[in-house]
Length: 72
Image (cartoon, rainbow, N blue to C red; front, side, top):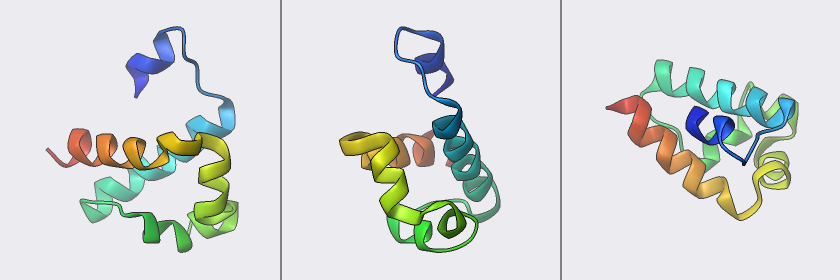
């Protein structure tokens, strides 16, 4: 995730906020799934719909990559 931030592809401040929330969720729950985005703290930020607006078709890939990187 942060390697992409350092390359040509940069994340916006709001995207980084979401990535941090996902990281924190994985650290406490070991794993994240798309339906977890319907619960706090994600629901207060627009839930799965907002994440899709921010990341588009990369949303599932981001969740998968973060699960692999942080649960290992």
